[in-house]
Image (cartoon, rainbow, N blue to C red; front, side, top):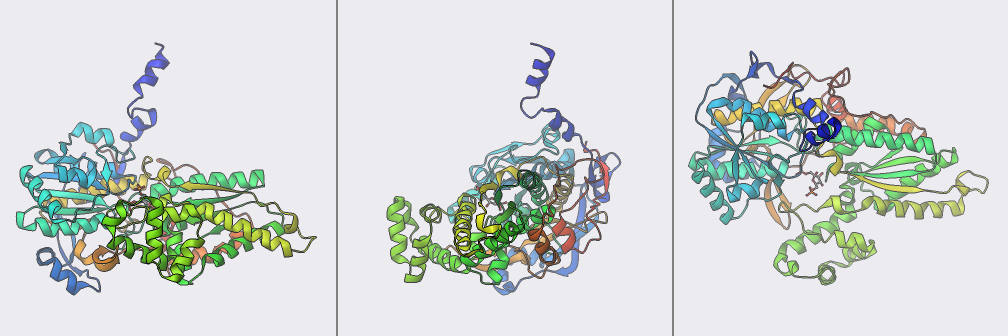
Amino acid sequence: MSQLNNNLVNMEKHHSSFENFVRTLPVPILKEFVKGSSLQAVGFKKSNQVLTTKDVAAITKEFPLSIEKSENKILVTDGVINIKGKRIAVLFSGGPASGGHNVVVGIKKALGEHNTLFATKAGPKGLLAGEFFEITDAMAASICNTGGFDFMGSDRTKIKSEEQFTQVKEVVTKHKIDTIIIVGGDDSNTNAAVLAELLAPLGVTVIGVPKTIDGDLQLGDLLPISFGFDTATKIYAEMVGNILQDTASSLKYWHFVKIMGRAASHVTLETSLQTRPAYTIISEEILEKKMSLAQVIDDIARVVKLRADKGINHGLVLIPEGFIEFIPEMQVLLTAMDEIMGHNLDKIVAMDITTKKEFIMSNLNAQTKALYQELPSNIQDMLLLERDSHGNLPLSQIPTETLVIEMVKARIAKLQETASKDSLFASYNFNALNHFFGYEGRCGAPTLFDAAYCLNLGLVAGSLALGGFTGYMAAITDLQNGGVAQAIPLTGLLNIERRHGQDEFVIEKALVKLNSPAFEFFVSRRKQWSENDCFTSPGPRQLMGPVAKMVPITVALNRNYENLTFDLGADTEVK
Ligand code: FBP
């Protein structure tokens, strides 16, 4: 074999030149975690800041042990600690998000050589099965700054039945686990709160880490953003920017791009602010303005016509993944379907798709049935897909972007019938292409922000575990001034919500607020963006150089930052 062949073979299994380089890239670390050339755990203590929701009374009744300990108080750092002999297990829960591996590295560094860190294989499912392996220093070094969750895998199992609770108790007792660290989104952190209460009598603690590309796990200054959001949006923005550049080059296509992010439109709003396309749907606005699907389509067609009349025959529409769930008439339909499916799970599971459709329709009222019947057959089928164990509809599988294209096409044809014959629009030929950007953005190598944010979150989570705290979520705030490590009581985030036909304790999804500075800025610019080509192409994410240390635009606007630069401490080699 030639030298080149040998080199190429040596790159297999995560040893590309890029992966080898990023593994050793220094990342910013908060000063309290740095001790000479190594990293250390810190202590935490209660502050006077209490966190509760409107459902505090019911939550206090359901989670007495957790609240007795935490008093729902935010924790702040308190010197350094030196604890030995703890056995801690970490697991990923839900969809992957870039930076997860650095959370594991941060925990490992906080634990140091006198405690043991176990990886849980394949998420909550692996916890139930007691499938752990010990994480060595060499393993931590091999995953540092790499994307994905492939080091140990993830899944969406919700631990909720008595049988599962017994299994978890048996597993932690058998493996002598002191703490479980759950790296997950709103649903997984809800599960962390439940497990913290369950395991308190055994002296086993549970800590959460805020992960999700969706950005819907955030809480003002206390939790500016979940990890993974920055990398995902920068990847989507690069791809959207490239397409925008193509539209203005080839001058003939409209691109309809569905962007992942489940219910909330944070990812779409951020991608829009980074790229400035002609049209962006924000689901929360549709809900607030009680817009029908027809009204949304009319508005897109209005912009297509306006541009065509000016001779601009191209453009790009961003569609948030959860858009369909926010149209009021669809919400009524989906809630009714959820209730029917929730109460007939055993029956439905055995039915084929046609019988299932007939069964659902026979239980809908006249209005919701009529709406369901109006939908294209493929969308009807998709709405029947099995919800995940947290009750979520698998939105990524519903091709809303093609539904929107078809409807806009029909609307344009209608508008052309009455358009003035000598207008440019009258002879305009609408060419539309569809895309879905989702899985492309969840596992890329983390941006410098996510790499640093996650390493520091891991250091917080590891420190909380060593300190014996339970029912807390790790947090880093004040992203522009060196960062502040804190911990948020999970019970202070819980609300009661109707899900899958019943009331449940859940962490409320943080949706885009229409009075937020980020949304207001978007509204102030969107007319310009639709009438002219104002797009920008942000290019690939940078790990070094002048634009590497950038927070998401929505985070900077909502937190009133003066600029986009973050400061999470000095660049530090993670040894
Ligand atoms: P999490 O909330 O678990 O982080 O998952 C986010 C997400 O990427 C959503 O944006 C998307 O709707 C969903 O996962 C897709 O789920 P799956 O990976 O099961 O297809």
